[in-house]
Length: 165
Image 1 (spheres, one colour):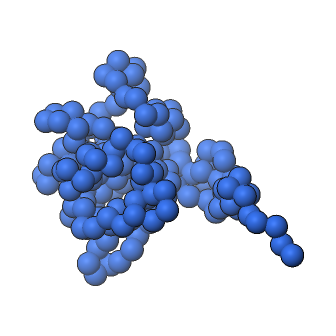
Image 2 (cartoon, helix red, strand yellow):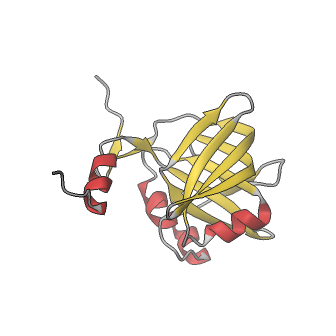
């Protein structure tokens, strides 16, 4: 008889799948942004153009997403690991953002996205589904700005870069 899979084993198994690293941003209050690092992000549909991102039920960004119904997704470049680490923290402040030289751009839809990233998506929240200890946010993509560059990857619990063969 097989033993039950532990949370650590499950996490290790899923860590075998390489992902990109994104920062999810939402307006905290007028002119102020709150963000969250996420690698649980993917495309859902081409028609309509939909994406999904998974957010921990305890995440501070969840009530803001529910309130504003708009979200930015910025795919990080390979040299932006410090941004990923910053947005993975629960607390954010102007001093740290200044030190990291963070710059936001507000899309025509009024969504904050991070400047100088591989791609920036502006989305409206279509629906949210609670699944286990996360909420799956489905967003309708309203705009995409492709800036280019190599993406930051996450694989087996570590940040990685794309290597040329």
